[in-house]
Image (cartoon, rainbow, N blue to C red; front, side):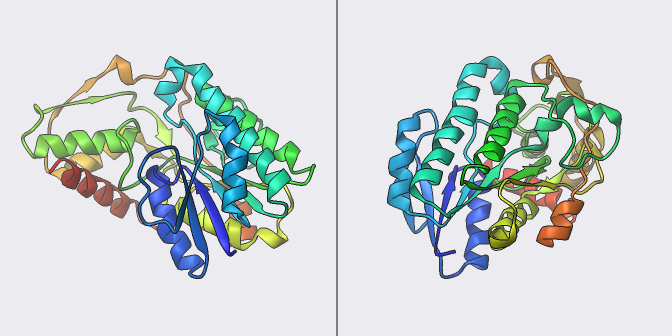
Length: 315
């Protein structure tokens, strides 16, 4: 890889991926997309906005990549319920425009698409770890838009796109927005510990089990896909998961212990999803077998890193 383009470079995963790419491809030019926001630390920046599909082709032409990691998306599930059409426009139609531009104007470039385990949705009700051949049965607009894009990348890989679809399960770490559960817990715990929030912590559903990863392990999966690109089948799909789900309420308990606080915990209806599944669990044996990937970061370290990050962010 000589030129690697990353969409969504300014987002939570993007900053972590930049560091992983620097380590794995020290000679490569790392190119970020931006639609006006700052993206420090990258070698080049090109303008791209998924809500403006016409921006995709010029961005690809300017970047001239031989590898692409497509992270950019409207990813907050709660927000997707509020404006489903905007979510579909970015996550499906923006992705289609970008992938088509890569297929037509960057022939041979490897397109690593960051899909999501959310695409499995109601298939998790079987209570078994899901492999990549599980039916896609999304339960919210975000997941539906990602499932549609996932399927589209698979189809386009039959027409010349060198697509690889990665389906990471829940992941967290430093820099994540508090629209996501672990970061939301960590932010409130840090504020309470600093005396800047009353000792009441507001939560959504605690009786949920989720297969959580550290963001660094997810980035390692994307890097492994880039490194293995020449021997992957076009349209290949890989889960990134631990296979060991954690109860959300237990995650909260552990974060409060690390923060040294014991607030009152109150349910907040605004944090509940209209549709949800009780338990998610992934089978990542394909990633282990083909990519040599396995999660490495201990969960306690992930929690401590996330909490310390919020302590720094709130000052």
